[in-house]
Amino acid sequence: MIRIANGQGFWGDWLEAPVRLVEQGPLDYLALDYLAEITMSILQKQKEADAKLGYARDFPPLIGRIAARLKERGVRVIANAGGVNPPACARQVRSLAPQLKVAVVTGDDIFPQLDELLAQGHELRNMETGEPLSAIQGKILSANAYLGAAPLVEALATGADVVIAGRSTDTALTLAPMVHRFSWAWDEWNRLAAGVIAGHIIECGAQSTGGNCIADWQTIPDFADIGYPIVEAEPDGTFVVTKHRGTGGRVSLETVKEQLLYELGDPKNYITPDCVADFTSIRLSGDGENRVRVTAIQGRPRTPMLKVSIAYLHGWKAVGTLVYSAPQAVEKAEAAGRIVRERLDQLGLKFDEVHTELFGYNACHGPAAPVNPNPPEVMLRIGVRGQERAAVDRFTRELIPLVLSGPPTATGFGEGKPSVREVVAYWPALIPREVIRTNVEVIE
Image (cartoon, rainbow, N blue to C red):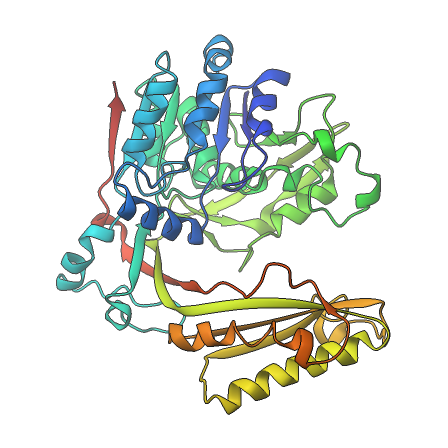
């Protein structure tokens, strides 16, 4: 049996979680998941500004902080913190933790190759609209293929204490240690699917140990010291989801079921680079306090394609807020929203979208919100999105004047006019897996 924990569900997750996982109990592997689709474009822009950047910058200091304990306890780290610049991330880790052997996985970043790929006939059509990538040429910020567990397993085989990748799948961070330690073959589909599902359960950190849990959330103990998830994996593909003893949170059938449904499309066809997992085959059972056993998982062969995550510029946006107090808070906020729209029309400004919502009234539930005609206060939030920055900037000057030229009791305007920001949109595409060439390098 091996113990695999996940201590980061996204870039910005609790910095203490990985430290406590290593210190509070036995582990064999520590997975750290940093990347989301929008994160890749942010990191690409950072790399364009400084060639030494483009990775999760809080990762190297974290490894430096726990390096001695990792070495002492034999815990190996697998992370996709490399973003769009895994080698730079690895070199920084080595400088802060020279006692650790670091391996880096590259090959997912196809941004520099896009012109060549298009010339070869790979249109990288949008999976939702069918448009070819040429429709957004000149606006692309990043392009990364989702790598599976294979190159991570290759990196673990070097004996590295820390394995750093770019855009690997979230599930691969957990599957890779299982394949490495149990010597699974790449066509043992049920076992690979078990590793994928184990990774899916723990990839969002504490979301599987009581965080963000709807089921009886008021009784979940000690959120301030919530334990992050651990998978106790067996060679046959069965595993237990748990957490360190004495930590807060809860591992239960309900918390695991909620996480299983996270970002799930067709439950019979959960497609990853490593296999296709059938979530309808999963069997869950209690295995003691804060322990859920997962068995009977079935999988099928991997597809011939890899998914590519492409981020591109899609115009500009700005969002502003005002707060209105009772009496007639809702009426005042709705009137203010109408005034802004009328003034934008009078100026002849065109936008792709103008969106208005009232916090404290209908922002979360929309038309399904309970009727509450006279809340003590509401926040008007109004935003625009368009292709012309000048039009969006003009919008930012139409909200604050309402403090004196609109309905009474407006407040909450201390930050001044809203900021104009670039809109980064997502372009999902497919590419034949043989096009993607990965490489593993040990950083000395």
